[in-house]
Image (tube, rainbow, N blue to C red):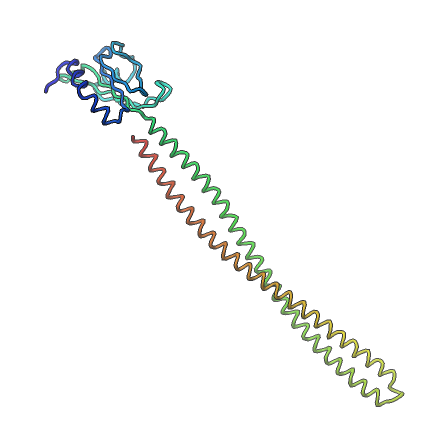
Length: 276
């Protein structure tokens, strides 16, 4: 059917208007103009374009631009203009290639703006979580380095204890030999009788000193053994902590990778919302 007049376009559009509203879920406001004024309006309750039938076409707007250029004009209108953000489509109506009017669609962008806001909040939250995880990861790495230093110091202590044990063994050997020499000296002093009495006293003191040294070495050996055991326990705990740190680092890497995937998905969502 050929439509020649603006009135015929209005009549035709009135017939299909309910289907348009159904198609866009009732979020589209519609108006039709001739070259001077609005001749038909059908606004949703949320998106009132203010203009009434009979009102003059505003100068400098999308409708005037569509009339002057003969081309479709698409613009986004911020919320402060009509109280709700929407995308405006001004489509020129032509007869014999001459513009005789304009059909105006106003599509609400409220859902898009909400989606954008949610997407931005998600990105912001992900960035904050990522920064926090980075801080935790750095802390774990620092603890791992400190543990390595402790392990090295503990190993050095253990090695030094082994050296001290060797020294103790030498001292114990000397004490044993000294005790034997004192015993031999006592025997020789006894053979010397009265002439060896003074030497006998010295020999006894040597044996007493040797026995005292042996007892001290036993105590030192016990202390060394205790320190060595404690050092080994510390080494075992440090090793366990290093294992835990490595597991935590691996878990943090997995979490960071998951957050990166969520961030990428959020960016895709934001891009899609911008195309609505």
